[in-house]
Image (cartoon, rainbow, N blue to C red; front, side, top):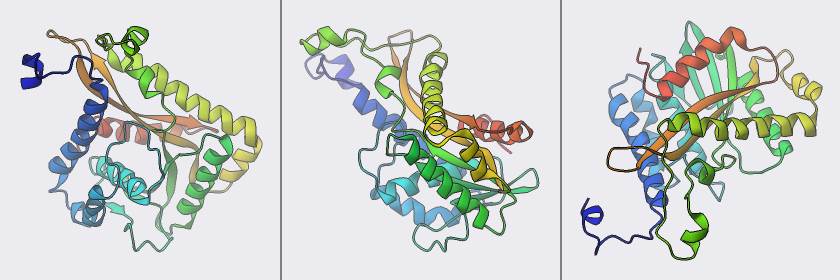
Length: 279
């Protein structure tokens, strides 16, 4: 607030997106931790919470390096989301995993779901498919899982800059004060960029691997013939006093086959991600 009110303290050319991306990413995480700490399943999350000092906490920007701690933190976030839709959530231990469980198990509507959480670092469809295959195998190997789905974190695929652009980019690079974009319906604006990222990965897999080969991966397996794309980024919202930084997160389905019978469960989880659903 002091920087905003005092022009001598504030740097008018600062790209505030970097700071607010970190702040919003951490805030969305901590808000869930504080709100859900009394859940009966929360104590088992402590080993993952210890990783918050070792990896990247925020999920709303690119991760330049693949770190095990960073990947485990994403598993923690997804497990926190599931606490709102399930009274029985099991998060596989980050260090003592035996390989007989997917990353998260949750009982939803009477069925035990397995969720294999993957963060994609490579750009090719083959890399995406390889991660999808690992996730399907994890779910299949879990004795308790009756059904499941692979959850792909697209943090390295989304065009974050396009979701929150500087409107006068050319002039800004020449020294002008940046003008940050802001929208009256920011979710609608960002949705198109997120859907583009999901379609890109879906099309890459189909083009490089072939739809029939992808479908063979799921044949006779417990995993749904699809992936759930976790997408989080930042943008600006129109406010009475100027642009307001805003976090946007959503789940989207990339379906290779018919998953309509389970759309209700995905919708519940998506609502929980937005903290609009509490059991």
